[in-house]
Length: 292
Image (cartoon, rainbow, N blue to C red; front, side):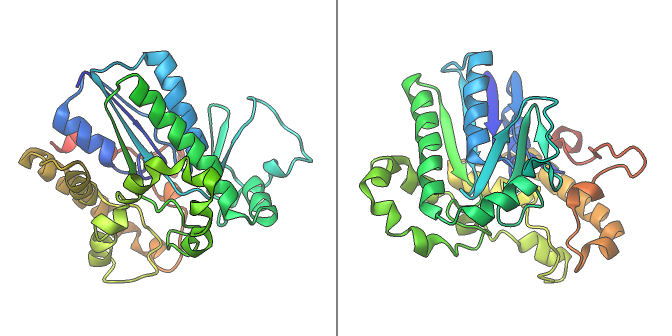
């Protein structure tokens, strides 16, 4: 591939190397851009694919990889500098990037906007219809141009909290004609669920001695590599797997020093991965190249 473009939420770009870094190290594209953003919903993801296509003019020599997230998220686009003290969106501590506020799951976000959404919107099917449109239009844009692409979902699309509790509510909705006509891409996408393919918490259970209150659920580099091998039916080189393991060991060593702050406290992990003096992100484990 000449260029690799990746899109998603915190399962695509987080405090340590995620699946895009593994693809980058293995295939060494001439151009690599990771558009992952913590807390991003499918609206933001689809928007970024469209914007990136306009900016970079995707070609048949590129590879576009999209990791969709669960449907219970709402991304807000707000002009830079906009502020209204009476606006509920100013409450909490929403994440923001380039005019977007990506606050993650509306049912457990600290953002005022998300708390408001979770209070007034109780219709899972509405989220499903909205996101199916984003997903369908994005895939068909790429397919119409003959652009090589892979679609994945590491977080279950239907779940409020990542535990599948809303699937029962959506069972009948999926069969509705307005949903079923847009769901051609849904079934193959559902087969890429991370928890269905990889025992998500294996490495964390090993480190935290099976403590379920550790509070961190993002997969580790080795988990990402195993996941990609199974979903894409590929085999990574030993160099890539070794680099993933070394990066993972570095993250575990870091958490060992922070263990009292982690167990039973469910901290903001982004704070743990910030320099406490400058509050700038620590990048010791972000890039897999340094472990190669």
